[in-house]
Each structure stands twice: as C-alpha cells, then as structure tokens.
Length: 273
Length: 273
Image (cartoon, rainbow over all chains, first blue to last red; front, side, top):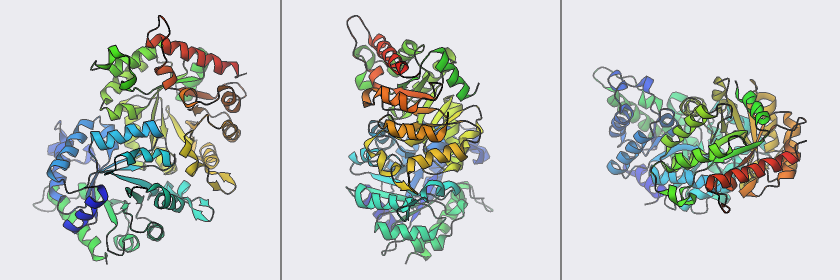
C-alpha cells in the first residue's frame, strides 16, 4: 500500500489526525531509563505502544538520534514500528536537501535503511533535489512549505510576484512536482490563515502540521484552516507535549503520554467537520 | 584557531583553493577494496593522504555514509583527518535545515560528534534555523545560496523585489546573519556571472564552490568570478573527478587522485592573481 493510502486508512482506523513525533531527549527521560544503554529504544517503544491506536502516523526526528550516534537505535525503532504496527505510516523527519546523486543516497537512507513510508525534504534546491525520492513510488515525499518558527518568514514570506514564497512552493509542488501523487507539504500551525491559503492551492494533498502542543498552536483554528472537505487531510504533529507529559497520580510516563495523545486527538476531532 | 583563520592558513600553506570532496561510492571503488569491511575508511584515508598537501579543505558528504549505515566509518575518517592533518579544515557537507532545538542537535552531530570545522546548512527555514550552529564560535556555517544543479533555479532564481532569491540570501547572510564572522556561502560554478554578483554582495566572505570537475564548471571563469582581491576567498570543490580518476600506467587509485588534484589546484592557481 502506498503512503497516501496507508495514511488515509490510518485516519479512518484510529479516527485520528494526530502524528506522534519521536524526538528523544535523554535529559527529559524518566530517571529509571536514563542510564540504560538502549534507553532511546525503550522510551520510544513504550511511547509507540501507548499511542499506536491514537495516531495516524509516527515521526521520528533523525537529528536527535544523529547527535547521539544512535542510528542503530533508530533502525531498531523503525523496524519495531513496521513489524508491530504496519498499518501506521512511519515518517522520517530529516528535511534533507541536496542534488540528484546525493539526494538518491538520502532516499536510500530514508526508504531502504530505515524503511520509512515518507520523508521530509527541503525545496530550496528545486525539483531535481526532490525527484530522486520519487523513484520509490510507494513512498511519500513531504516538502517543507511554511514553517512555524520565528525565522520561517525570513525567506518563506518574501514577495514573489505578489505571492509569498511559501505559496509559490505550494503551487510548484501541487502543479508540477507531484507527478505521481506522492507529495505532501509541511505547513506550521502558527498561522492558521496561511494554512487556509495553502489548502486552497493544493486541493486534498495531505499536510504535515507541526506547531501544536509544546509549540503553542491553536488546535481549533489549525484544524478548521487545514482540513479537507472530508474532514481529514492533515497529520497534526505533537512531540514534546506527548513524550514528556507530566505523569499524574498513578501514571508512568507512557500512561501520561497516552492521556495527552488521547486528549489531543479528541480535541482535534471536535473541529474536523 | 577558528574556521575562517584555519582556512586562510590552508590557502597559504598549500597554495591551494581546492576542496577535496569525499563522496565514497562503493560501486566505483578499486576491486581490491570493495569487499573489505572498512573499505570506506581505507579508500578515504588513501585519498586524504594523497592530497593533503594540495587541498585547502576536505569535505565528506554525509549522505554517502548514511545510505550505507557507515557513520562509524565517517567518525573514523574525521578523527583521522583532525589528528593527522589538523591544519586542513574539515567541512561536513550535510545541508541541514531545521528549527532551533532540532538544529542544535544537528550542530552537536557536526561539531561534537564528527569534530567538523564547518557544516553546510540550508537557509529556507530562516535565521533561527542557522543561529544554533553559531553557538560553536570557532566553527564555520556555510549557507546554501546558489546551487549548480538544473533545478537550482526553481526557487533560487525567483524574483524578489528585483533580485533573484539567491542574491537576497547572500544579502541576508552578509548583512544580518554573519554576526560572528563565521559564515560562508555555497555558490555553484555553473553560472560564473552569478558568482561574480554574489562576490560583490558579500565582500571577502569565503565561498564553497561545487560544480567544477565531473560537474563540468569552467575553472577559469569560476576563479575570475569568485576570487577576492587577494586571490583567495574560495573553496573550489571537486569530488568524483579526483576520487575516481582513471589510473594511468603505473598508478594506483590514490596516485591518480593525486595527479588530478594537483592538476586541478594548478589550473585554479593560474587564474587567481
């Protein structure tokens, strides 16, 4: 099953637009895990098991693994995800951007090594830096469009022929780059009106939307702005708010993560349509 | 010594603006190396030893290591470079681009794990995606500006207030982002007139210039367009033309690499002054 179909099935199966981001930060791990050699695997597996029936996707952020030299643990987590929850898409958040031959190596990394269903990529180097990923026809290519950080406007908001650059990117991807129907876009939750503009441009193309949860985006405004007519079309990511949820009486970290994931999924669902 | 000073010293010491790119492709390795478990380390060390007196920098491309799960071999190569040739800057070509907390993880990867003197980064997410690297005050941050691939124009050539986007990026980096004097820019060799435009904008800031060698850029036009008044200011990268030079009678792959590296350095030097 290709990425888009798998994502659609997960939206329905788990009644969820919630993407759970896996950004393992040892400093924030529970004390009993911190000193374990495979702490990252244990932590991420516990989060995955606790939220797999609430999520439409999991999204490991490779930077957190790369900083620690923990690629082997990322491989193990991806393998566990694919084997145990084959119906939940695995998105590798890598934001790669490089030219043809090198992009092909990054595609091998994402799709062959880690077995990701989709990978995030950066559009700055143009179509031939994105096209190599499309050789894996059943995988998704999620292109950065409008990001939720303060500096996102430095380039993305520049005026290009009357449109901000990010809308130009949305048009490029929807109009030319999405030849095989494999593409999605990253649009942050910080500016719902911009999310609505992008939705108008791209039709039903899926959106990966970071910025909800710890980053403070407004869930109602985000969902109303980004949803498709069918009330789906979004992977609304939350990482830290779920991973590092403060346990209540009687909860461990995984139960706390499940509680916050369920609340977030349910809050999203209130505004779907 | 910080990156910029180290680079300046290497320009002088080796009388060279040549950056040797390390893009290890097993399929193109000499037959006797292909089946060795540490083939990449052996190959890269041989190239490094054969060219260290001819290069102003070495630039491993991390994608080639990541595709093979060979981060440990990249660590070993970087460690060897730092220990054996501490006067030659080590540039990690990673083209990372992500927001603050995640960018900090990528900076740890480049600077702490691999000990790179500089790393390439993508400007699409703006200043706060670049700033975290600057916390390492002695390291270099090399920002993508104008790339030499065909699709480079898709975004970089868009008209922003009468200037192509890549010139806007050059202005942003030279005018605002380069607070600590740590920045350099990537500008491809394919369009020498554009290289000249960028040089006008950025003063003496160093340029990393891919596209010479296997990618076919014109050396004379590239050097004349990109050099500073002092005849330096450039790291002109060649990867495949050196790594996979065809041996002549009596040469092994390393000797062939040395011959091509010397020819390239010398050709560059003819147009520096």
